[in-house]
Amino acid sequence: MVDLIILLALVAAIVLVTARWHISPFLALLGAALLATFLYRIPLEDSVTTVTEAFGSTLGNIGLVIIFGTMIGVILERSGAAISMADAIIRLIGNRFPNLTMSLIGYIVSIPVFCDSGYVILNSLRKAITSRAGISGLATATALMTGLFATHTLVPPTPGPLAAAEELGVTAHLGLLIGLGIPVALLSALAALLFASRLSHKEFAALPPEREDDIEVQDYEALRRSFGTLPNPFLAFSPIGVPLLLVCLGSIAQLPGEPFGPGAVTPTLVFLGTPVIALIIGLIIATSLLSGEVKLNQFNSQIHEAVRVAAPILLITGAGASFGAVLNASPLTEYLSENIAGLGLGLGVPFLIAAALKTAQGSSTVAIVTGSALVSPLLGSLGLDSTEGAVLAVLAVGAGAMVVSHANDSFFWVVSQLSRIPVATAYRTLTVATAIQGLTAFIAILLLSLVIL
Image 1 (cartoon, rainbow, N blue to C red):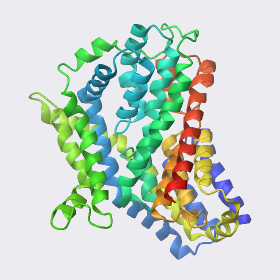
Image 2: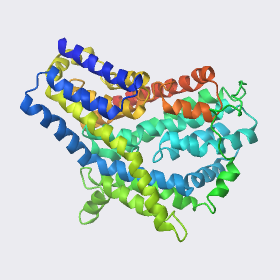
Image 3: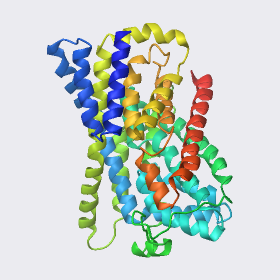
Image 4: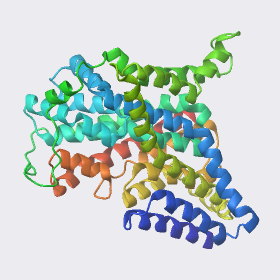
C-alpha cells in the first residue's frame, strides 16, 4: 500500500509542478524518476543506470521516427501543402456540409502536423467556409478542433502515439496500430461532429477583434496567395500517404503464411515498412514540395525548425521512459499485479490514468507519455501483454489523453482565441466535445477488444 501511495504522490507532484508552476515536463518526469529510485529503495548502484539506459534506448528506438515525422509536418505546413490538401477535400465534399468538411480536413492534416499548428493554418479557411455557409462559428471551430484532436492522439506518426508504442513494446507493429487507430479516431471525430452540428445555429457573443490579446490572421484568399502556386494535391498528400502505406504493407508482409510469397518481395517490404525508412521516404517526397531557386535554403530553414519542435518531445519521451523503467524495477509492479488483476478493469486502467493526467495538467503528449510509462509495468496483470492487447492499451491511453481540453491546455486557448470564443462558452462547447470524443474512442476500443483479444 505504501508503494502505491508513493506512486500517487509522484504523479500528483508531476501534475503540480507542470500545471501550476510551469516546470518543464522533461525536468518533472526525470526528477520523479530519480526520486522514485530512492523512495522505492532501488540499490544505489542500479538507480542511475536504470534511468539512463531507459532514456537512451527509448530515444535510440523512437527518436529518429519522431524527428523525421516532425520534419514532414513542418514542410507540409510551410510549403502550403496543408492548404492544398484542404482545398482538395473541399472540392471533393463541396460547401454543403461545412462541419463535416472541417472535421475531415482536421482529421487528415493532424496525422503529421501538430494540432495547434494545424488549427492556426486552417483557421482562415474555417472562417471562409463559416461565412459562405452562414452558420455559427462555434460549430466549425468545434468540428475542426476535434477532427485535429482525433488523429493527434491516436494515429502515428504523431509523436504521442509513437512514444506510447515504444513504451508498451509495439513499435514493430505500427501497421496494426495505424490500422486500428484510423477507424477509432474516425469514430471519435464523428461523435464530436454530431455534437458540433447541434451548434450550427447557436449564437454567441464573440470576442471583439479590437481586443489586444486577440490573435489576428490573414483571410483565406490572402493566405493562399502568400504561398504562390500551391503544390499538386496528389503530391501534397504523398508525404503522409506513402509512409502510412509502406508501414502497413511491411506489417502485412510479416504475417504468418508469407502473404506476398517467398523471395525478395517480403524482406524488401519489411525493410521499406520500417518506420524510420518509411518516414525518410516521406521526407524525400516532401522536399519536392519546396520550389524555386532558394530550395536548399528553404529546406535547411524548415529542418532547423523541425528539430527545434521535436527536441522537447524527444526529451519528454525519454524522461517518461526513465520514469516507467524505475516503476518497472520497483516493488510497485508486484503489488499492482497482485491487486489490480482481480478488479477486472482491463483497458479502463490506461484510459483513466491518461484521462486524469490530461485533465490535470493539460498536455495530451505529456499525458500519453506519462500514462504509457505508468501502464507499461501493468500490462501482464491487466491481461494486455499480447501484441494486440498492448496495441489496444496504446489506443486507450490516446483516448484518455483527449479527456478533457480546458484552460490548462494550450490547444484550448489556440482554438478559443483564434475563433473569438469566450472562455465560458468554450467550456460548454470545446471542453464537452473533447469529453464526448474521448469516451467514444474508448467505447470503440472496448468493442475492438471483444473481437481481437
